Image 1: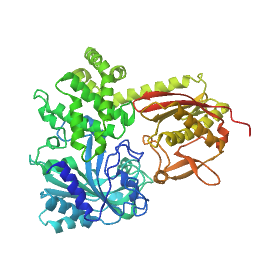
Image 2: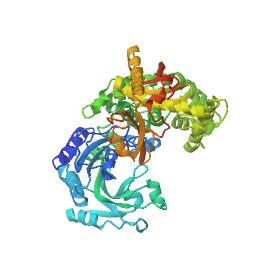
Image 3: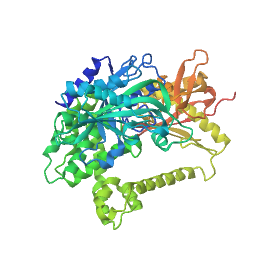
Length: 597
């Protein structure tokens, strides 16, 4: 059974059983506690806590999702990048999942899973696992799940396991969590493969998984008002079992051209290319662009790793694998057919080719490659850690990723110190990273500029469209520098309209106040925020709004400082626009002296 059929049969199975089918969310998540979407439940996380699934409009379907939902979610886990190359680890993968926010619980969830696997697909379950319980956190053995599985198949083997195996969550800094039951099937080689994990969200924990495991004082599991179900079944693993292959890389979810790679190239390299080609296409399709930070850094790592292998083995043509991925997935994910994907890849390829050969030669000249030497190779030639480690061989034997990352952080600290030097070496009374001021006079100026930047982003979105998002900001007493996502140069008329829109908002003397509300409610209100930032559970939302009508010109998550009324900003003037990189523009602007009040 091909992968397209598996997706469709899963979604149809649950739709017929009263589930709303919700499309995959982006790999760039709304949840600021994670860098990329790591699980199918990510977009549904607020429904397990406070959002009402029967009343809250879900943006992708334009209506409430209801109590029961199913999806096929694009997912990405950066923790596995170093392990890719063996027979199982992946970065990008798809997660089939059914979810219930109080609609049903253990009995129905276990029955659905058993029916889908054994009757719908005709597979045999090898065994299942359940939670053995843990007294220190107050969670008993899951006797109910044991009884339910035995009622469906008295001969089924049921294994009891602990926290590290069958207790899931929370994801990020806090969230729902609970015991799980896992389903194992055998692949063609007779190996037991975990196919489906069913999480019973009975609890909420106000901290991270690490804090839960450590038993942090003052943080305890709290029973959810409505227990829920969160399941995840890896499509790649399901395909391996259904298609009777020995590994996920032999399924039809990977570029078919991989099998045509000459035999003199080892299987590990083929698997890396197969995984990274999928990762590259899906990250680019969701708007990520290669850079040296956050999601862009992840993308650059996987692209450049492929390009190094292409350089070393000319028979590898990465572009052809990317096109195969587009063809494979285009029927289910139309966004991957975007022609910009190959265009953006070729731009990064061209940028990297100029330094790659010199970098590899320099790598071979190094007698011993420690963290400092590795970072110099990265900084000067763009060689990723993985390539330095792999091709440095014995000379890099002692090199560890954590040491490399420390060098990276040390470099960032030096860069920050250099920026502060621009202020004459005197102390700063304000330094948020985005705003800097050395005295009270400068503080007043940067506060006006900071507030103007809120208006600028709103004006850009009004003139250019809602695809505009902040990509960076830096404010000094002389000017504001605002980076935003946009794929072309603005026309003179567009610049004029943006400037006019900001000044009109200033003239209206809008109130610039804030409210402290839960993060998910801020998102529901349409407040702008950066997906790359990490936000607390309760955030400040600043709105520039008409005091009489309450209509907001801008609404944004921010920590301040801001003026109280927009007329205090003064006249706003755009100095210039420029390109920062692929798909990102920059505007520099200043404000004239605010009028006396």
